[in-house]
Length: 56
Image 1: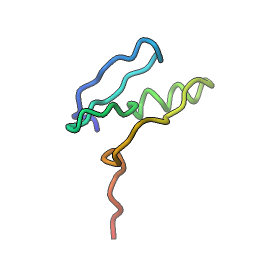
Image 2 (image 1 turned 90 degrees about the vertical axis):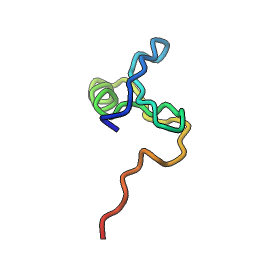
Image 3 (image 1 turned 135 degrees about the vertical axis):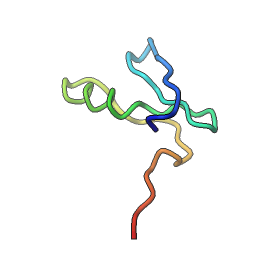
């Protein structure tokens, strides 16, 4: 996700990472910080492309 372009969501107060499918995924670094200060949820419309594949 680090290579995906960032999109600032002023209404929510955090960055999204835009995948190649045009879906905004909350930036993991932003969400980790906001959750640590009691702020945000990482819920989003998702097609599953932000989930890391499992390693055998």
